[in-house]
Image (cartoon, rainbow, N blue to C red; front, side):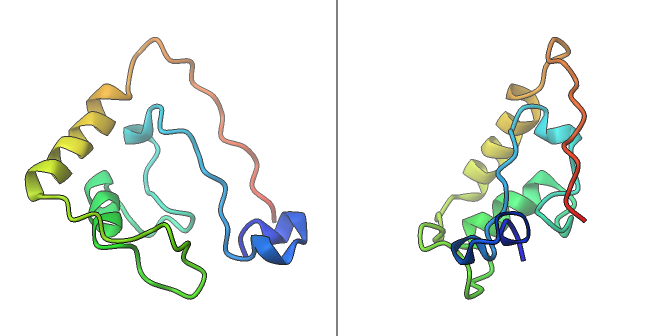
Length: 96
C-alpha cells in the first residue's frame, strides 16, 4: 500500500505523497482515501495524534492545540493559502 505500489521498496509501505498546501481549501476531501471532508476534521485528526496504526510515522504525535489554535490554523489554510493569482494545476495521475 502507499508509495510501495510505485517504488516497490519495503520501506515505502504505508507512505503517501505529500501534496502542496496551496489552495488546500479547494481540494477536499482530504487524506489519501478522502475520509476527512473538512480542513477542521484534518486538523483535529492530527491534533489527537493521528489514528495510531502500525505504519504511522513516529513523528506524528498529539499536538495539544487549543480549540482557538485549531480554528486559527484552519483559517490560515483557508484564507492565507488561497489566492486568485495562483495558477490552477491539474492533479497528478494516480497509480492504478
